[in-house]
Image (cartoon, rainbow, N blue to C red; front, side, top):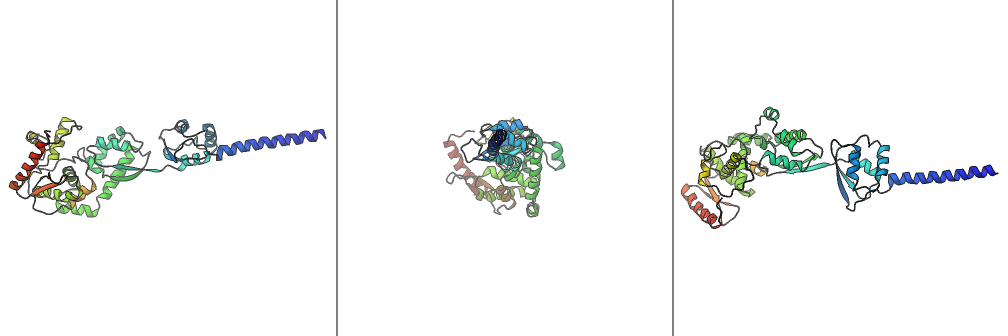
Length: 347
């Protein structure tokens, strides 16, 4: 009888212990283990991450790291860390956290435009994916890649068509570059290639011309008209005489791209640079800016007209006054010069 009571007591204690252990296991797996108040938090796991890196990244977001580690070990995640960008939701339990980190890597929306040089582009992209600006710039300027794809240092910026794209956060510099080449080829479809041929420009020349058009006017609806002026000059063998190319030439020659130049002086027009379209007749060796798609299409579909000149319209800011003759242009220009002098803009 006594032995029977002992056996029953041990069984009860065992059941209690098993219940407590089961409760602990259940809580470890299925109870909420997040410590943030926002609905969602993002965690970045780099490509060379170890499980300890994951733990350090989760430290401010998870209440009980020991229970998370236990579940991660049991589910095999600790030995198979996956890099990427992951979204953690408030109230997630350890099971959900591990499952998310194993398979929840979401694409990143990468957006870029209005970059002046490859250096600027590399900096912009490095803010959005794991690859740093140094590795990105190195891949952008890789001479073997450029030669293989018929680009050069001056034309390389034109390969990157500004838009919104989806990438995984842990995309490498080389993977990003290769994807952009595919997007470039996709952009230059049969229709655009045919239009470029019809106006007598190569795709690279179209992009360079578009970069000038974009720097001349921020108004999308005016770009085909401005493009028409430059195409009139180009087709008639004139120099393009584009102020933005002179500004770029100054920056490129001095190496100071942080310089802000609001006014081109007569002495600047003598600068010996292939980008100076007041000195050289040909289209510059490459884009002076990253043109929007609207600017590229404005060149491909430029407006047919008889205008050869234009100057900023001081009565309709952002737009320009166009002229067919030099005499008419000089009258418009005098009005602009009076206005700019009044503003005290000397450089």
